[in-house]
Image 1 (cartoon, rainbow, N blue to C red):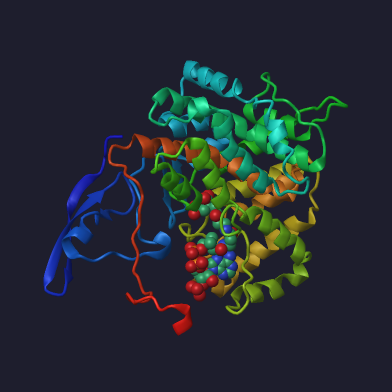
Image 2 (image 1 turned 180 degrees about the vertical axis):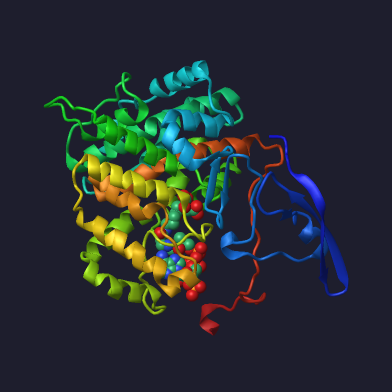
Length: 434
Ligand code: SDX
């Protein structure tokens, strides 16, 4: 990848009697950066930034977020325009290649993905090793990591053709594996992928069809799910994407890197928040209980957090939450579930929180996970599948970011340093003398 950073002056840092001058660069949009890559060599100091709140880990051209304006761009296109006008396959192509496809490119890419949706038949034996009550994300971590054992012919990352095949296999097989994880836990037979359906319709039939009867695709619901997948596809250098990049920086194969990303996404502070948010709304149960939970969320001694609220970057609103809320109402209207009880709690909780001085002062707003749980449950997905759906969609962003990392001539193995505050060097004392 050719760097598009533009030099924009320098920054001077004075430490004791020494002044270090560091280059400053500008990107297309967003904050400038101070390049500190030579800081340790010139100052004999490390910088410290737990949680990387002020640290850019890389240069990227894939996604841009402006947390104050509530902007989210995929390769320059606003997320709401893509969600309204595009589809999963077209946005996946955009994230991978950097431009929207023409008709020929679209059809070729769609064919490449469609014809990789089946998994090796031996995969069923692999699944049999799990307990039937395993959490789908536990299965996804194991199964995706195991892909490198089944598709060893696309694990040599130095071979560009193998990287392309692994990319197609990863995007194509995630829906099949996610649906198998669900079917395995409910004891129903696996449903094979169908090449006559689009990506999201295919996933829905693998999830909900049974051999005993014909499964009818509901196009309104399929379109809503496709929109939800687009919203979840990528999000700059979030925790799971950074995990994938760090794993990939060692030269690990893409299946192993994506498995690492799935493991990180599972946490309730990250992708696990959609499952946690719905469970929280169910626990609140009725709008009359909201004040008690708002009080708990503010209480520092109480570990309770309002799941689906707050974000490291968005400090006004998450543009995905706005589209998600609209999709939620579309689905509930299409299914005639207007009195969905958790929706009433969610809307009242959102109204109260956005007026509460604690949430206003800390700039906490609903994020993508706040409404996704209600929508996914209305679509028929069990709560424990919510994060698996997030992982299915985010696989596109993970693999696009992995590709960009691997093709970046400046990339090297990621290896952060630390400030050490442990014991100074000391001599070993035999146990008899302690
Ligand atoms: C995702 O990074 C991404 O891009 C992630 C993601 C993606 O697409 O990849 O957008 C997906 O992970 C969305 C976030 C889903 N997680 C949740 O909804 C879980 C609940 N949210 C919180 O855990 C929290 O808001 C985080 C983890 C999302 C953000 O944490 P930060 O940026 O580290 O903020 P913080 O924890 O330092 O909070 C700042 C203050 C704290 O109070 P003080 O210590 O300053 O007094 O706000 C408080 C927090 O206690 N706070 C909350 C809160 N979130 C933050 N208080 C109550 N409820 C909350 N939800």
